[in-house]
Length: 407
Image 1 (cartoon, rainbow, N blue to C red):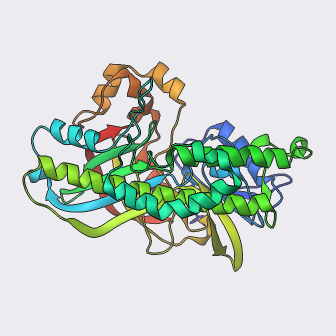
Image 2: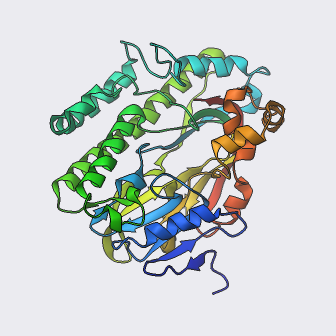
């Protein structure tokens, strides 16, 4: 049918792939990786591919992988529960100071971020956590105890001291203005060190369990757990815990960002009920086409009809608060951002510091060589990405950042 927004690819010996990528470049390596995943025997109906698709570890970023009685740990990845939170405030652009450097500095002081070589981890708390992080950890501690009783080495991770911290890479905190000049706070992060440790451990465990079968897999990173096995049950328990950690992590950071900004903006303000907290790197049990299945969204957001989500652009482009249209063919999903169009190494090779400064003009953010791999030009055109998924979501708010804190 000509009105369909997706292209269907038929894979020899595998399931179909439906791609919402009209007008958006897709690297050949990403297509090849998608075809490998489509050949796994437990794929339910088809893979759904979002317009921000690009090559990833294990499975392709920007893909929705529905499975029956099996989960691929590397498809979920190691940044378990990575996602976004956004909150609208009663502030307007006129309430912000002309010089936003103090706002950025306050946020940077309130939320540990980045990485510092040596003994002190700038991206973690010290011995004393803020009260809201302690309260969040109290909710998480019983589940973590159950997990570490079976996998004691996970106890040595930075589980507690990373709660309420940002991380590195493409994680960020932003102050944004919407189309009505209302101020929003938005941030991107996940389950930090403990999620990484959980993901890494179970990915390797799946490979060990399938040692005699690895040669038959299209890719070693597609090693999987079958439902009903002990490791499957343990993984589901651990991954759901890490996803809850990620959600609480974002809530703690958002509370601290709001309090930090209150200290540097004299006008009192409140937050609206209009807020979103969504994963875009996770697995969940869902019902689609009349069947109970597992849906792994590796760089994709759930977009059930009426459900709000966040699709961020790069640090120099627009971001969007969206409402899901409940498209069943996409397994109720949409993209999780603009998506990289080149590797970090290629971005550092191709762009200069002058390019980065020009691309982030008007944004209070880092403009040094260590963030060139995150420069806007390294990402796909967010407007093209949004056009390609018009049947998946509708735009509720358009946000433009004025402050950006990078990990």
